[in-house]
Length: 73
Image (cartoon, rainbow, N blue to C red; front, side):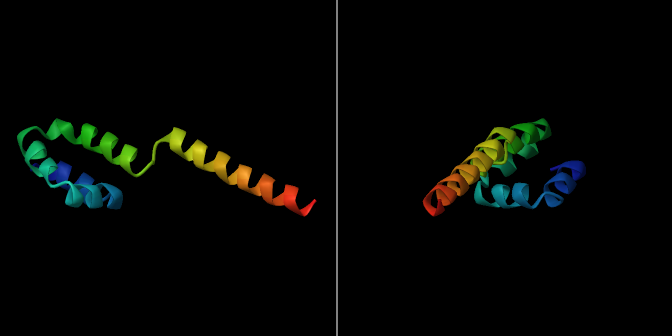
């Protein structure tokens, strides 16, 4: 694996953890380092790190707070 890809993986703890959990990506990255973008997309989908996932999480938290305050009032 080329050095810039290694640095990129080491600097992102989520990416590093995902790569360790899905070792087939080692072979993919050795053969074609440009696949790092696909790896990152897959990791963000699995760990729910996409912007839409963050918005859904915030919406769920607001709904929980609204329910809590409705029970108090």
